[in-house]
Image (tube, rainbow, N blue to C red; front, side):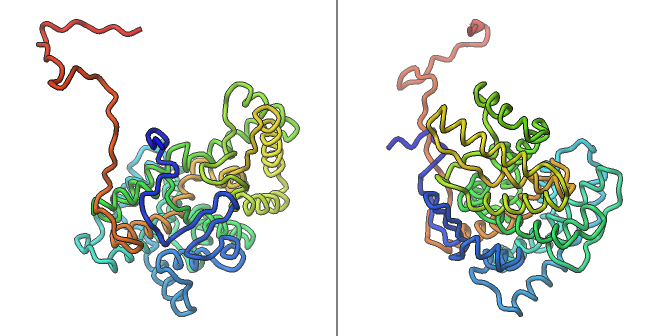
Length: 392
């Protein structure tokens, strides 16, 4: 098999004990536990503990973990001043990426490379990333930064973002969104984090790189494109025509299809149910439009392409966040708020070879297909003798 130019798809590069995906049967497993069981019985804090430490916590362990998160949520005052000095037009993911790097400046034991120090940094980043995202949104809108309160991860983020305590339904929806986005094996941003970790860079560098990878529209940025699509359609009755026009013109329907799942993404099913529930509570049309887009895309692809396609996690998450009054450009940062649990766990697994020993540094090969003038190389032409090259 020629493994070149296929985005490393189906290329096994490492062992992991963190996450398993069964793309044929639509199963997502965190540390041995089915995502559906975690959604139905767990919280984000429990799930984050499971990912980071490998087992579900006892009551005492969970209490201590929540205490550590609570104590770490505050943002250093110089970092808040840095936020206030940024251009208000700055993209939230760019702001978040640089803030993650800046947090390294406040780690007084940055030279400590022990596993315990990495766990501490993981908890610090889990706690502070939601605070940074919420703070930036308020700063860019000329509002004061809100300090965290006692309460869950989901409650705190929504409160710091909006300045009012969320409803029980909003808190539950956000908590589930955080659980299902927390981990997804060797996706682009996680692999970026692990590759950086293989150089033995510190945790903040690894997570900053992961945030950069997540910002791309083919990865974490896809749900923003989904919401733009829904806003453009505007009316459920127009969804079928809009989808047909987009596909006939060679365009893509964001939120449909997945690189791994060959059946329904289990996260999409969960989010679809939440979207329907929240749309009823908010009395809006976004679930109805999304569901019509899903059906229209499936129908068109089957009739015209003989392909079966399913929704992915982005299709329904977009309208969920929008229904809670969250700005579209915060969709991807919210992804990061959740995925930091998985990223940091992968960094630790990579650095401390917890699944299996492997080479210390990722170093894949590339096949050169550029200019070739023979084994001695091309003849160097002096600058004064070079002719301008024209390409058609």
